[in-house]
Image (cartoon, rainbow, N blue to C red; front, side, top):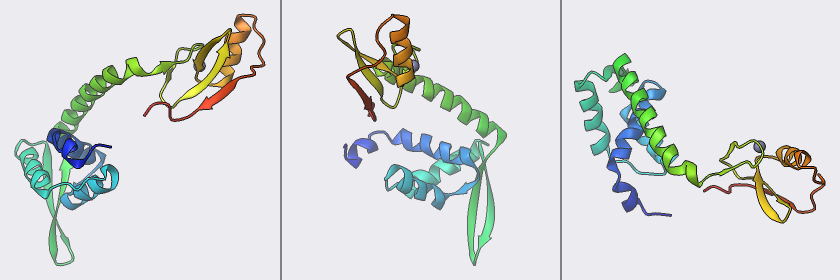
Length: 162
Ligand SMILES: [Zn+2]
């Protein structure tokens, strides 16, 4: 595992993550900080969250409503329709970057060619180790080639991709 310092190199990721939390629905600053802790195991600095929320508000991507919580005032932040579109554009861009980076390293099922994100099923077929998404695909693969379908060596792999 990398230490917190490494993740701090990527401070823009924090802002990206804040947008994903806002995209889930209206939220307040404290809730964002709590989600960093809970989901990313990261202690986020209020010094990043609050100024960023303010910048989003200044650009009309987020609106802020004050709500009384006991005797304290709390600010609830919501994405504006424009903010929602901004997030969607970012997510699309981000997901295509991420899939370009990880896809070539992922294995594919030898039968149906689907991508094996969470491990899969391997079998020795004619002396070669082949990956399949499931035992059904392995059976079909062998049937199509007229090979015996009862494999002696099979193994279920889980969490192959880390
Ligand atoms: Zn398959």
